[in-house]
Length: 140
Image (cartoon, rainbow, N blue to C red; front, side):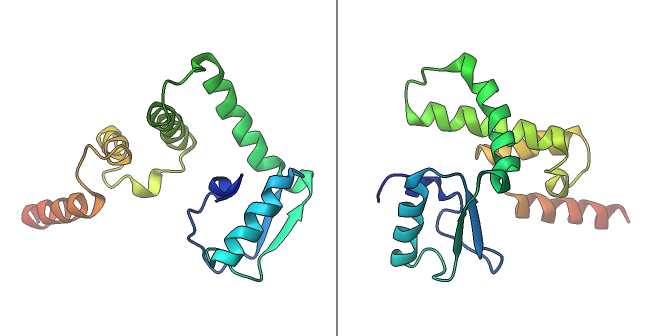
């Protein structure tokens, strides 16, 4: 894979809404998108718009993440960098209410379970949902 390919964000998965990708004017994005199209990991008809103002919302969100990461520069490995950034993103999603749909119990315990699942240390969501439904049926 060439430079910038890992920054596509979807990991090669796409939906029917992935018809336009907005990026800034960095040349690596065009090369990465072309490579993804030739590999079949991105639809051939995907348009690439290199217009800065269309990407401002995403860039503003990344700016907040950069502010959080700046004090912890110097990650020793990709594993620790990944876990740290993932933790920041999970906590921000909880604070912004973006993870509410995944909170099965709608309380602080549900938020803790989301964090556990994000890092692979808790039960999967399906197991937890089945258990919750079973408990509610038994109580009824």
